[in-house]
Length: 333
Ligand code: TYM
Image (cartoon, rainbow, N blue to C red; front, side, top):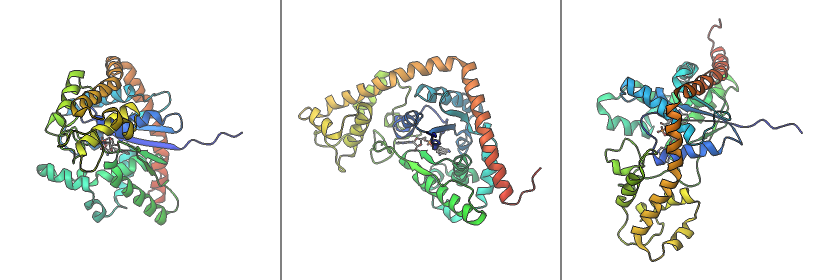
């Protein structure tokens, strides 16, 4: 029987510091799980990172660290392509063409742009504004069918679909219109301190997030300090966002359902529960941390993975970019 062509996946993550538990549960963990069923392409979005001011040497180091961390989280370069965005120049080439097919009004509606420009009022640069166009180029340049991301990227993905459909309408079928792939649970892990806000590594309060490289005692402390709600019942409900968030984390780590968790902690209060959450996170992250240290020490291997990834991704991307340039009327060499 003829083997069916696998669907293609693309996703990316910014190398702006160690990934949070939110990045892991919302995206990166799923990337590893999708590798057998799909043809996967995973990218370190270092061009997106410079929409906020970065220290060059630190950004280079964080890019290597992000690569090591992705592999430690289970992304296997024998199965998936892993590369650094800036090393495949076709992304930015396509981005220009797409930006000429994206409306100012569409970009103005992006909530992430509004949030980030309010937070960094001294540096509201054009890149921050056109950020979602580059993201659309990242996705469309591989003809990706599916994009596994957390809920905060939904609006960017919707814009990508609109750009693709519009372009196809004007120039004829060119791009695959991608679908988002969101985890059933954990698409939005919330801050441990303000559970109405998403967990983010840029939070000023370090107790608001868990980083994948946090030591066990730090994880325990952060979980113990997590904001909960006035009564002491471990139960999920919209008016108990703190406890519900911890239950989501615990459920993602252990595979237990909310019902099972409620029964497990019936009559036991938050203290026991928070320790159990911390232990489940530590158990999941410890092997990742060990593997990360091993990989980071093997710089030659990491460089080889990224080089092969960029070369292979570059060949695919180049073909798409050429096709698009031809369609919009650029003279071919
Ligand atoms: P970034 O680096 O902000 O986040 C990487 C991934 O982690 C998810 N995520 C979360 N999921 C659940 N709960 C949270 N608290 C949480 N915080 C972050 C994000 O949804 C994301 O999936 N623009 C992207 C990077 C990017 C990209 C792309 C993604 C560039 N090009 C093309 C997909 C396709 C970003 O900044 O993700």
